[in-house]
Image (cartoon, rainbow, N blue to C red; front, side):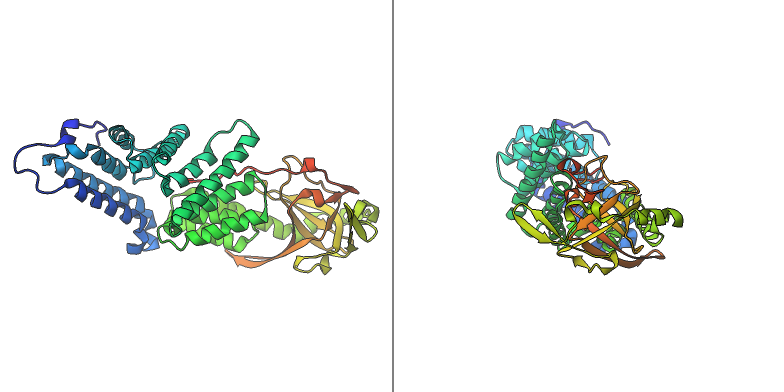
Length: 451
């Protein structure tokens, strides 16, 4: 396909009796049909045909482009900007960057600078070509003419990928990205793509600003809204990002299921499968470590437990803890007596017998054994890079939050309890409370196919 644009062809012939209808109307409908074919593919095809979707969309794109060639005999020089825009949009229907689409759309915005749709399509072209700066310029430029949902949500995506010179600027970009996505949703609360991008903005905030359960709940709520839209729920990105959020909520069974959904919608996209396999291996490691006391030999385990001393509870020993002017009652109980959920006014204490590696390094997970030889996994969030605990450390955890994992997946049966710790600063290690220098956010390394 030639990337050269012939202005004479675009202008069309001006002979008499050649203009029978406005070709722009017909082309507009044809491009709309092309996008409906892509976005609603699974309304007319089974999920088993997902592997054919890319080729089917490209065939439909070629058929659409042939309609543009049929307009050579029409006089359309009065709508050349719209013609360029429509042809560029048709080429832009595929995931990969198309140089001819960029060329056509660039011509369109030069001819008609207020053509917002062309600015948005051109921005998506630059986005596909990893030209973040130019993509941002397009979306910002479009917003100067109209506060539209497409520019807003795309700008939210761009800000999350834009290079920041400082951590403070990075945080500002992420928060601004959330604001743009929220505004996009407010303009059309039925648009699932906008909801999905808002969910992604919250997920990025979770990793960059603070690993807060509230942020994850907002993220999941946005994804649930997105799934109400047939177009959004046909997108593998939605289920991939939802799986990531579910993983950090420790909803592991649902996370694995969501990775499976992403894999089904795009069998050639390897990232969901890789992440699914990594999570499955992590769960196996946790399950076997918990059920084997961290694989510590009996003699070593005996020595560790014997070395437990309540003085290493530090500020949590003695039945109470003073925070500011407030005194909080804390009763030391065995791990086996913990209830599911929040255990108010309780504290547990044990020895670290192992730690479990997660591919994303979040959470930091380790196994804790108490004097009754009960072993539980502890997951710690917001831990600074390079920080943590080591084997043999004595750890006290006040008012522990307990989660039960009990499910089966791919012939693996998981059944264990864990303690979720939102911030390391509440932990007491070897008699001393951890300081604020132990606390930090984390980076989300693998996040996007298109966002």
